[in-house]
Length: 426
Image 1: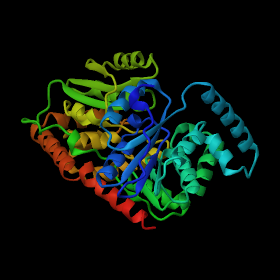
Image 2 (image 1 turned 30 degrees about the vertical axis):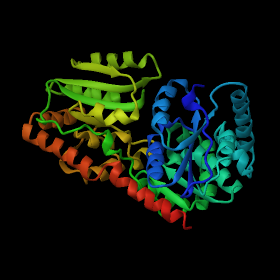
Image 3 (image 1 turned 180 degrees about the vertical axis):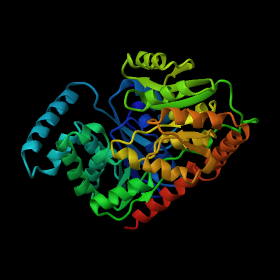
Image 4 (image 1 turned 45 degrees about the vertical axis):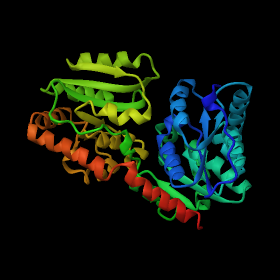
């Protein structure tokens, strides 16, 4: 691996406690972890990040983050090689045993959940820290092992409600049982609990009889915002709709948006930013557009560094926060998109999940509800919105104001810092 991915040894003479953040993901696919590491380092803590590496195309985005990071880090490479093959075999065997054993030991359940969890846990345990905070469930498992081995504090930051996170989990009782066993055992051990959305915090508290996790919203720094609001916040011709994600694929509601745009009288362009894992999916979308009679442009853009997302979004007229109603995790989580569009200062067209509706209630004119199951009425509403200059201008001004005043990391990180300070006293 190239230099930016080498392990940096942590120092042991730090003025404030060391915090170790643990994840199985690439840092570039987990911007929340990066924001938290930056905030805690700036607050005077000595921060070390343990992150995974298993997908080479993400390396270039990781390198940008590591280049500017003031915290130290360990990268656990588990994507290839003989060890990776052995770990996958062990996971398959562990899953077979767990499926047939009512009281499998927790370490075996952990190996059944994630192939590289033992490797990540070992890397985390070698970092001396006063608080280990897991990101993702595999990160929680590894952090719990490190905290137990070093006889210190454990924390967890929930970005999703993992027991109901994906369709695959909902259709697999065995996988659900593994997730619930791990969370039921490990979460009560945490002195530090945060969640990315209020309804998610409530779901964790209710499901596992926990104290209510502190909500730390997944907003972004003001330094990533455009330099200034548009001089004339009017709709362009054609109107520019925008959606982004690390990956672009089926089951994300994109087809429904194309159907809505095809019914609109306002000329539009739809830009989708992200990586197409299925090389045929772009052609599938073009076919959907042709069959729907959509005459606008479909514009496909590659992934970019997470720090550029708000500035890239600002070049558009409407940000799309289209979330399906299923699996149940979608009802309680708030995606990065919603907050990115606010920071960019563009109004949002959103679908009616419980979490998005609750947030939109605070945003007023900055957000408009659309219903993918009601194509014609959604198209009409968007037409009326975009062809009313005063109304659209008000929406854009409201988005810009909310992003500047409340929904940004400069404001929200104080909640995280206070939560960590309190946890270190426990």
